[in-house]
Image (tube, rainbow, N blue to C red; front, side, top):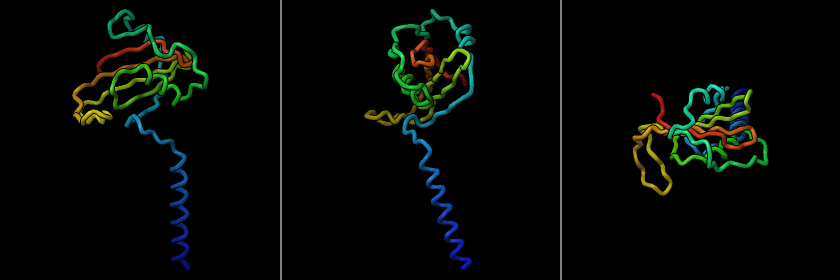
Length: 149
């Protein structure tokens, strides 16, 4: 009787764990993602030379407001449309005072590029592109550069 109860309890725990696991969203791309806390878009703007070659202030893909709410995944999808970087990781942050999202796409040196139709290659670059979008999904700014060590 005690053994049957233990088996039943294990089965219930496994089913409960499997049910919880199914509710977790699956991200097939990119390999790693993170949601960070707040940042200050005003501080970012103050720290940048907006006329620098690595700063893009016009000719964006996202020039019209999104029709849906701008949650984490919608922000990622819209930012991804602006990026020409083969990235390994992205991070998302939000400035609630300015209602601006920041999505940084990064390459990680040493990782193998899965590249779709491209052959497997060991990544040597460490480039990044950061896309800033307002709360309606319109791109405000893109900054390209190298990752900081």
